[in-house]
Amino acid sequence: MTSLFLLVTLFLMQARMPLAFLATRAHCRLMFSRASISTPKSVSSTQSSRHSTPKPIAPPGVVVAKVQNPAFGLVELHPTGFGPALKPIQDIRNTEMAAPPTITTSTSQQLPLLRPALPPTPPHPMVPVTAGSSPPPAAPPPTLWPSSRGRPAVRCMCGNNMSAPLPAIVPAARKATAAVIFLHGLGDTGHGWSEALAGIKSPHVKYICPHAPFMPVTLNMNMSMPSWFDIIGLSPDSQEDEVGIKQAAENVKALIDQEVKNGIPSNRIILGGFSQGGALSLYTALTTHQKLAGVVALSCWLPLRTSFVQGAVGVNKEIPVLQCHGDCDPLVPLMFGSLTVEKLKTMINPANITFKTYSGMMHSSCIEEMMDIKQFIDKHLPPVD
Image 1 (cartoon, rainbow, N blue to C red):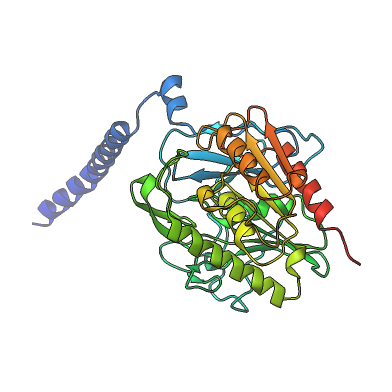
Image 2: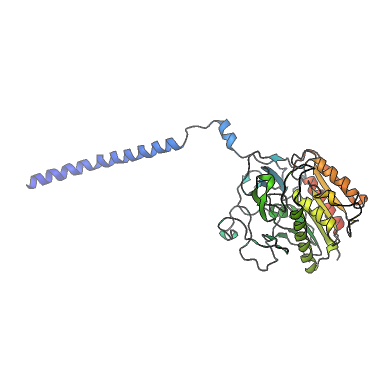
């Protein structure tokens, strides 16, 4: 009996190693087979290039913020820093519809960045997040995400029931004696333009970039996105959202009033915007009773132009206007800018209107345009101390 027990024990000891070895080989073969199924052995250069993301082209020393516009699938380039070589930035178009706005940067390579968001608890109901002149870090802390959906917390920006995230602000380096209120375009946020303006800021000027509320946009198949008012079409004879435009203008006027309460007189405030935001800034300046220092209107048009009667403009008949447009704009054609200039000449002093066009620029911005904006701001908002 003892001998039989020893023989069985010896047999099991000898068989243990090859059984484990076979099990290990079988496990490895299974893992390898799964890996070979999920991962192709080779990918052609054509396939890899088709799925790769095009890199924006920027001159040396210039950092560019690329904002994907979900309304038109357009990539808008906003400069966020200026190096020694100030050359126009090449415009890039994205033919695919984009998800909610995402911001990336491009220097020598693309770096994925999380979308900027507001702190969950601002120190004061009218004190928004501050934007610097450099792009946000590649991995912001989790506290930058105030909601599970990844959208900034919705708070009241100003009066008239306009519910939107608090504006992005580039504060003055010293006491603010002037301000620029800049309105972004359809589907965008104020963060991209706050970065752009930080690159050309003056030490005594405060830059305020509010965010439009989310609403369905008829032009984009009623998709909900940041928009100052509804856009029904992009042709000169398209129907316009008159009620929405007038309500949005009242909201901007309330924001101007808030800055006046903060100690900056309205005649030390420049109103500006890009695309839909530029259209709203023009309409607001021509209908407000607040005397403004100027208007910067980029790649835009004049809303409700037929409602203006010649000579009906009030306190801003002498307002300086800088209007800029790209001659290759496929979304808001240069013709819109030209028609707007001709209309403005019948309403305000033509000598105060400056219309600049930029060769090869699409529905975007370039360094040359940003330099023209800086010169306009410095001229009409000089230091007072």
